[in-house]
Amino acid sequence: MIKLHDLYFKPFISEKEIDTAVQTMVDGIAADLGDEVPVFIGILNGSFMLVSDFVKKYPKPCEVTFIKLASYEGVKSTEDIQRLIGLTQDLTGRTVVILEDIIDSGNTLEEVHRIFKNENVKQLIIATLFYKPEAYNKDFKLHYVGMEIPNKFIVGYGLDYNGLGRDLPDVYQLKTTQHMTNIVLFGPPGAGKGTQANFLKEKYDLIHISTGDVFRFNIKNETALGMLAKSFMDKGELVPDQVTIDMLSKEVEKNAGANGFIFDGFPRTNAQAKALDELMENKDSQINAMVALEVDDEVLVERLLERGKTSGRTDDSDENIIRNRIKQYYTKTAILKDYYADQNKYFGVDGVGSIEDITVRLGTVLDKL
Ligand code: IMP
Ligand code: MG
Image (cartoon, rainbow, N blue to C red):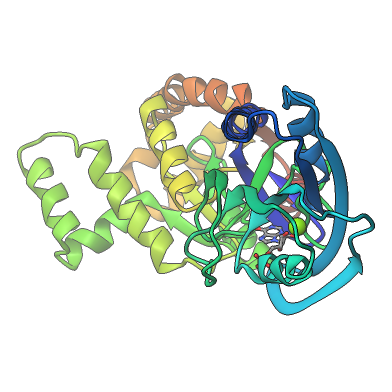
């Protein structure tokens, strides 16, 4: 992912795919023009990179020149095309091939046709690397198209967003979901996960998705997914990951405009972590970090025994049960720690100290995401 000015873009078309498309355009045009010496005309600024790569590949003699037009403001095409540099040579009787980086509304192309109306060229051929058929609203024929793309704003390979991005060798697409901070919150029993999740949620305006709560909500409200989950639980079987993922997906959708999410209680396995990555990718987003509260076993035991005295939770009053729960946590989460560490997304945070101190430590991690 990259950021240009205020916007985030994700990889869309690789340098290699572009190269193949340019080569195909070159082959088609060279074959059709035979021994004609064409004048290739690039439309500046966007087409400089295409024109350079194109003519290097062109197998026969040719001429190259440019005209400079401007129509785009920010991420929108405007009708008002400015002619900044026009034609500077006589093209009477010549075969002219316009090389465009992209054809969107077709307004620029209309201006190109206006420019050539009285030039008496032999033929005017239009070639564009990228073409957005859904946005095009003119009738001019496009003789060669490198690649059709959906009606999304792109940058790279000559194309810019307010001046930035032209230098990128690959093409990126504007993300429909802009930046989110999504974390997977981990911590052994007694680490203070719930307390800290509440603070983080407030401070960063995140949605806390506790898988346990989501399950209880779906079952209590007898949603289709809740009933499905219950049917497995009633048989004493584990609920399949896909059911849980579908529930989480609904939660994410319900809060589509959120700044981000805190996932709590999920994932617990590698397969679930992968499924969560896919879910976020489908939402044009990603998991940014696994944040784990690290607390020494002895401190945990002490804290839980203390809590057991007042909470009445039986699993908090037996030291053996407590130690076993802590052990289980480490056996289960070690794999996940590796999963996220491999992507440089694991952040361990010292969970011993005052609640405020720990919140500050977590904040230092989240501020960097
Ligand atoms: P049209 O006049 O709407 O066809 O747009 C043509 C010009 O707008 C191109 O030459 C580009 O300079 C610019 N443009 C169109 N679509 C995009 C895009 O997705 N990203 C960046 N610039 C674009
Ligand atoms: Mg252009």
